[in-house]
Image (tube, rainbow, N blue to C red; front, side, top):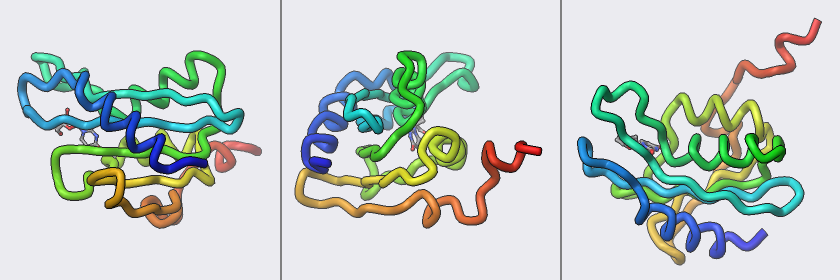
Length: 130
Ligand code: THU
């Protein structure tokens, strides 16, 4: 996995963020198990609640094209190390139990986490198997 490629594409996707209300841009880029790359940005809506984060945009693009396993996802935002929100962490849990989460400020300044670090003791699809 080339971390820098994912960060570079996340930075590129961030430029497409549609953020007229928060003015807070986020970009994401993920790698699927079969090495396909999908990017996403946050998209805000005037009534606020339909707003979607960059991470979920990228994940839903991948899943809607048939890729249900995510190996890694890079996230870049306007704050110093922008971490995924709780909802996005749960969506990552669904499609990437072993995902590496790259939180980047730039190509040379990033940290890598496991999902278990960011969402410990999680609830997931296996819990519903009976
Ligand atoms: N946002 C993301 O896109 N990803 C995150 O991980 C945190 C928050 C977006 C949602 C909203 O458009 C803006 O950032 C401010 O919350």
